Length: 248
Image 1 (cartoon, rainbow, N blue to C red):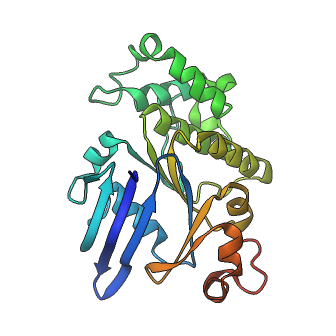
Image 2 (cartoon, one colour):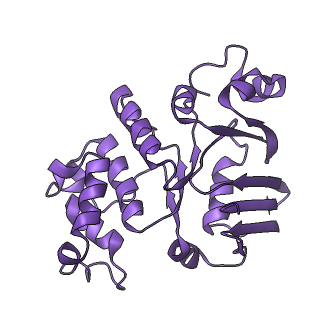
């Protein structure tokens, strides 16, 4: 059974159809890159999946369950996590405090700070080693590099047990080295977590991509391997350009 299915998904803002009858299927543990020109509907699609925006048509199925009408917080509890382009971390708190907050099932931001260490030490160690923040546990998040802050937010989603992770331009503002490390993190998550990555950096897409979905004007334009979509004349005309290199 597919983990995520979008069936004829659509949303209209005024007279503009930002997403127009989109069909998309992801298997459990798949990493899918979602690319397309600005205004293609990529970020809006993530908004629809996580519940930030309500669709005007179509259905969203997660683990075979129709979640189209579920509010955002219930989708998060079901295992859908969203990472925005700007890191959403608590900058005044340390790395470990951010992770404690993310993992706590208790209501309220600070209620978890006294219970986390004894309940989840193994999982935390696993996650911080994955994102290479084991040496920064007591560093204030605001003092991390931009890339480290992005990795901290990914770690927070992992601590929330997000099984489907939606990432919107995760490498924006990163150095070449940070971008490469982010690709390694994603590769290590493949198979255990399902990921949709919206990205404009085609070099990064080439590094991580399994299947690539190309959107244009809110609709599906092409789908396949990175080599297949780069050779597609419609994709080249709409997005990649004659060279098909670099950023769009």
